Amino acid sequence: EPEVTQTPSHQVTQMGQEVILRCVPISNHLYFYWYRQILGQKVEFLVSFYNNEISEKSEIFDDQFSVERPDGSNFTLKIRSTKLEDSAMYFCASEGGTGDRNEQFFGPGTRLTVL
Amino acid sequence: GQSLEQPSEVTAVEGAIVQINCTYQTSGFYGLSWYQQHDGGAPTFLSYNALDGLEETGRFSSFLSRSDSYGYLLLQELQMKDSASYFCAASIRGGYNKLIFGAGTRLAVHP
Image 1: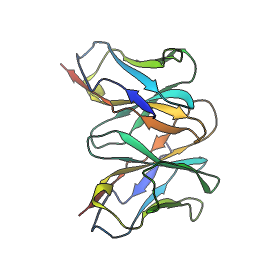
Image 2: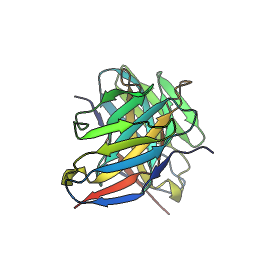
Image 3: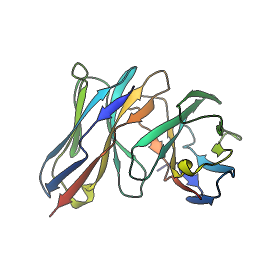
Image 4: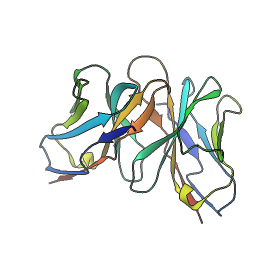
């Protein structure tokens, strides 16, 4: 069964450093998302991406964040200068865009730890 | 703002039925989804309601009342493996179905 994959599974970085989180969505999907989940809290929407551009972003997704789909398969989230409060699990999700199920498929996540 | 309310914890025994309620206050509401998340895992889609009424998928059913801004997830014939967190999530149009999640309900199933 097709699945969303994410690398790395765990990333440890120093405050102020740049990180790039990588995702490979399901190949025929059209809509891509990044969410984050701080430990013990709810999943929070960061950004949606369609047709090679951002369709919506949340207040969390400030100028330090960017997304890219560089090669038609990978979907990346970059944090330019990490802060302690960026420590969280980051989930990538993709959606086919067809039918009425509105089912988003989540990857296993990348746990980001900022020291 | 956008918010979804659900109970923080529910406890039940194997074989029982449990209902997890969700009320929402959102603009641009399109539908209500339910996701399951085991500790350390990713959210996994369970069901989706765009229209009022009951949707049944095996042991799980989900209900939506748009006029009451209310939905629930019904889990039947509970098994130990159903112990997990359950999130209701509102699909918001205009953002290509971005999901706004509730805080989650932790379900503990006991023998």
